Length: 56
Image 1 (tube, rainbow, N blue to C red):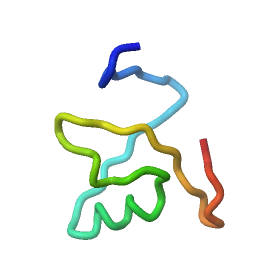
Image 2: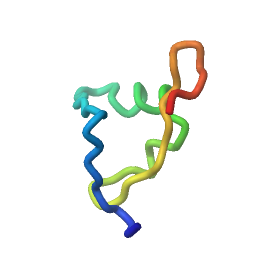
Image 3: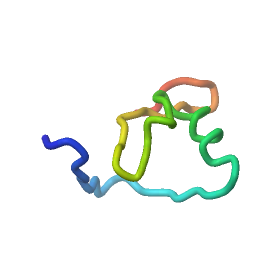
Image 4: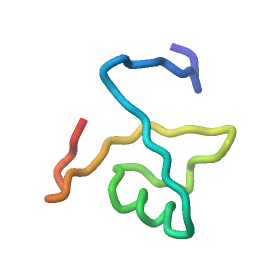
């Protein structure tokens, strides 16, 4: 697989969030450092559920 390649997964969805607290909100619910993300760089990450367990 090539780096920064987009693969559509039909059983998944996308959400869009905006606002001043966006980075702080995401930093608290994902397993990677949100500051590593930019318009030209993506990261792999998993999502935490409310009890802080990993949801893959």
